[in-house]
Image (tube, rainbow, N blue to C red):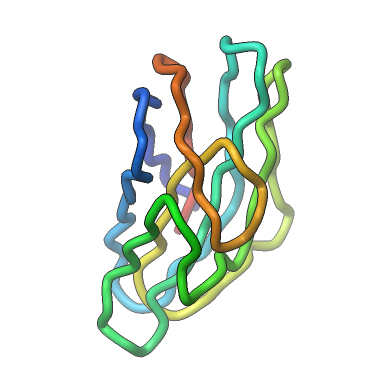
Length: 119
């Protein structure tokens, strides 16, 4: 059974990492997000893996790329899976105005809801 983790966007210049603390493997079941800004933004996901190192994306190029990136178009996003994407460790996510994997430009709009379904 999937659980929901919800956060709200805020205007940020450096990505703010949200952590889903799940023991063992974390299953990604889907995402729902609103977009009232009129400009698409992107939600990026990465798993901690076996390293015990917290992921810390910056507004410039990182040494890692996210495992998954979802565009949140101006009409919003509802995406659900029949089978989860599973990986080891905690699941991290952040939002940015650029789709490029390791690049995370700022998001100026705030007030949109992002809900991640996980297990």
